[in-house]
Image 1: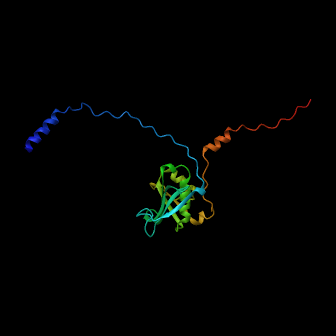
Image 2: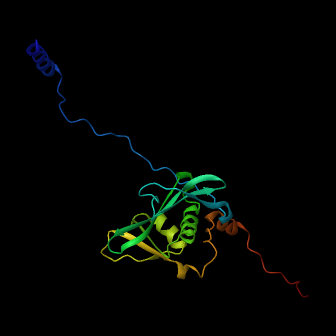
Image 3: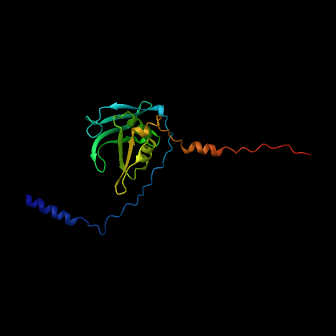
Length: 198
């Protein structure tokens, strides 16, 4: 009987209509989602809660991990691991992940800053893709400076406790364009007019 089953499968393949040309490409176009303007957060509303961490994410003897909270709600996580990676060698490396709803509000800047200040390490590196401009801006606002060599594929930033000691205050969150727009909408003040002399 197995031979009969094979014969039926072969016959079924012959009966199927063969497509004369390849399947047409999808005509569906994807449009990027519009960017939603989000209000910046206050530094007093963001805090780090120490967590145990997991392997590779702040767990272990050399790691540190925190949950980022905004007004008591989880906004993301930040962790520091001790790694051995060129071109630096053994060093503390920070990673931050924010929930999508928390992105673009200045929470990342505060997360970087608070984690570095609370960390036991005096020198912390941040490795990121060169295309990750938002994370690079957030790290730079928290006191990181560029330390990458030109031939490196990734962006490398470094934070040093002694250089950050000068700025005790957490990084300020830049106001969105809504404030500058309201300033521009105000009517310019006209100079006081003097009464005419007759």
